[in-house]
Image (cartoon, rainbow, N blue to C red; front, top):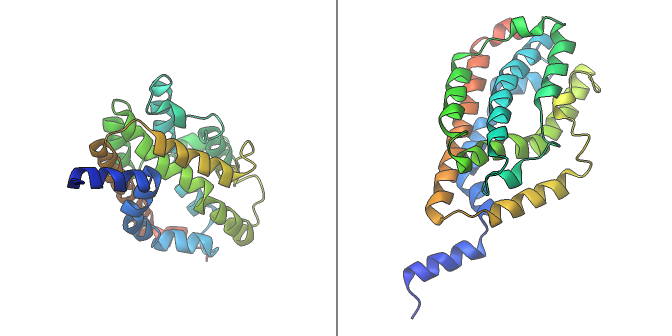
Length: 228
C-alpha cells in the first residue's frame, strides 16, 4: 500500500521544483505587474528621469545581490546559478551615466521600500544560499523573460536603442530560452529538501512583494516624473 508520504514524494518528483516555484508564486507575480508607474513608463508617459529613477533603485538591489553572489562561489546550492553572463551592475551604471551624466552616483538615494528590500537581502542572501537563489531567480529570470518585452516597449516609447537599455541587453546570452531552460533544470536538481523548497517559494513570494512596494514608492511620486 502506498502511504500519503510516498504519494507526496511521487507528486514532487512528477512536478519539478521550477514548476512549483512558478505555480506557488504566480499570484504574487501578477499582482506586482499591476504597477501604475511601470504602466506609465511603458506607455512613454514618463520623463527620462522617471525611468532613470527606476534604474537607480534597481541598481541598488542588483549591487547588493551581486555582492552576495560572490560569497557563494563554492556553495553546492547557489554556485550552479552564478554566471558572469547575468551580471547587471556594469550595465546599470552605464545606463545611469547616459541618462543622468557622469555625476549620476550623487543622484542615487534608496527609497524606503528599497531600503527594506536591501535589508532583506542582507538578512538572507549572504548566509542562506537557497535564499540567495530565491532572489536570484526573481530578478534574472524576470530580466530574460518579461524584461525583454519591456526592452522592446521602451525602444518604441523613448527611441532608445542601446544606450539607456543596456540593463536589458544580454550580449552573452543570444538564446534566452535555452538559458532559462537550463536554469530551471538546475532548480529541479538543486539539493534541497521539501521543507527547504517551500522556504524558497515563500521567499520568492516575499521578493515579489518587496518589488511591488518599490514600485508603489515610485508611484507615490509619479506626478514629478510625468512628461508635460
